[in-house]
Amino acid sequence: MVKTLQIILTIMKTFNETLVQKMERLANLTIRSLQSGKTACSKRCLNLAEQLLQKGNAEMKNAITNVYLYSVSHYMELNRYPMAKLLPVSLHKEYVKQINTSGV
Image (tube, rainbow, N blue to C red; front, top):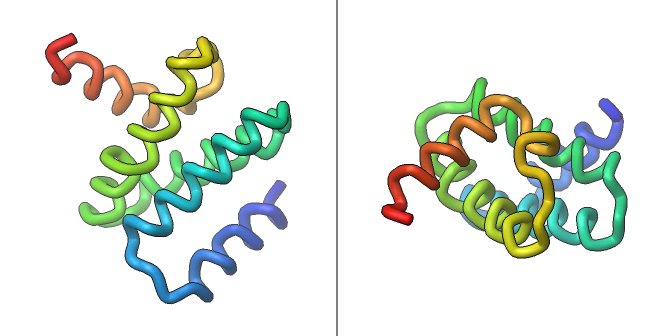
């Protein structure tokens, strides 16, 4: 598990991309792993996003909530994934904030 996270972080560091593009790539990786039924990979991606949300600076936190979480939660809602079971605690709290502030 740690090795996979290290590989993902290494890939993210080697590409000359903006933070938003990196979060889009991580979101796409998470969604693809959900689509293919790779629950362990999905959980690793979600846990990585959780760690970045907890330990990142303000720019990182904004990118996680506005890009990553928005994309992943949208996919999960459409496909009726159990949000409370799959999302780590901090990501789930941010998801609830998004839902409550969206006016839905």
